[in-house]
Image (spheres, rainbow, N blue to C red):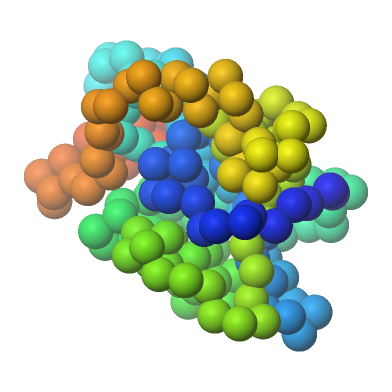
Length: 181
């Protein structure tokens, strides 16, 4: 997998854009690769139609070799509570890879900096649409020029927080997404 390190830490809006594939490294040869994806347009078990514009985001961690590209579903992203496991979660929150992803999300959500020796890189693809990045500015930011233009035009913010009353509905959405894979 080709990776490119960010010149500056991406924003929460960047990583929740729908096609984020990121690798965090601690400088000691250890790294974790993960994805944060939006649901494809689908129908949840309760009959509701959901699409990429919803606040739902799924977190998966690479558990196989890079060549195989196999990922295991972890849960849903909630920026106020972190990663929220669902019935379909394959890894516990206590797994070191999941803990690393949760740490990255907290760093990005709080606009903190990554400590010296650590790095966060993207897979050389746009965080929004997944296309290969070729422009140096786009490689640095992780977002292609067309998606950046759309992002700048759309000033509406889609928060990721959900309260406990919505948890059951979001679990149904996550289960529907897993059933469609």
